[in-house]
Structures are given as C-alpha cells and as structure tokens.
Image 1: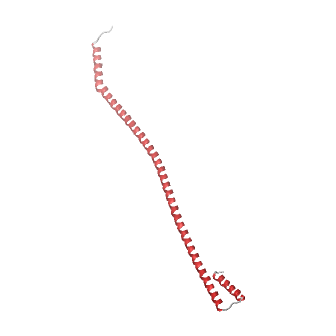
Image 2: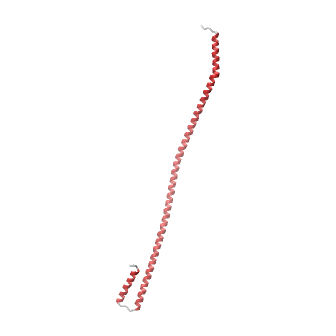
Image 3: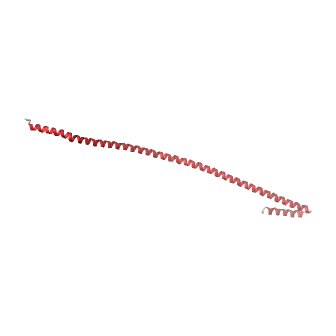
Length: 163
C-alpha cells in the first residue's frame, strides 16, 4: 500500500511552489511576449491588407484615369479635326473669293482693252473715211480711181490692224 511519507509531501509542495513560481515568473511573461508578437503580426497583416486595398483602389483609379485620358484624347483629336476642317473650308472660301476677284479684274481689264481697241478701230476707220472723202472731193474720179482708192483704203486698213 501506499504510505504517505513526509518527503513525498515536501516534494509535492516543492513541485507546487515551483509550478506557481514558474507560472508567475516564466509562463506569464512568455505568454505576454507571445501575445505581443501575435498582436504585432495581426497589426502587420491588417496593415498589409489595408495597403493591398489601397493599392487596388489606386490601380482602379489609375485605370479609370487612363480610360478617361484615352477618351479625352479622342475627343480632343476629333475637336481638332473639326476645327481643321472648318479652317480648311474658310481658307477655301477665301481663296475662291480671291480667285473670283482676280477673274473679275481680268475680265474688266479685258473689256477695257477691247473697248480701247474698238475706239482705236473706230478712230482709224473715221480717219480713213475722212481721208477718202477729202481725196474724192479734191478731184473728179473715174472707175479706175475708185478701184485704186479702194485698194489703198484696204491696204491702210490692213496695216492699221497689224496684218
């Protein structure tokens, strides 16, 4: 049977005291350190998760901005193309107006030249008729004289026209 011995009692008491001392001075500080480290790890994981969410939000924002930049660039390009087309049409209209003005000036100059040549031709014709009348009035003409005068008149008229 079992006998209770005083040594056994002292051993149990020593083990209990040792257990209580170890628990108070060793187990609790180690558990506190482990708890602190676990808290630091949890905080780091939470911070990493927050950073991950922030990075995802920043990425989404950047992608949205990139899409907006593409759309904005396309809109600007179209606006510039429309503006260039308007300017082209304006330049074409201005060039057409200038061309029409130049053509009108040319027509006016040509008409003025034509009128001037007609006046010169009228003046030459009048001078020739006057000369012929003066010669006819100076003498009595025969049919031969008429033919010769007519030939002279035609010759002068041809020389006056530059033929």
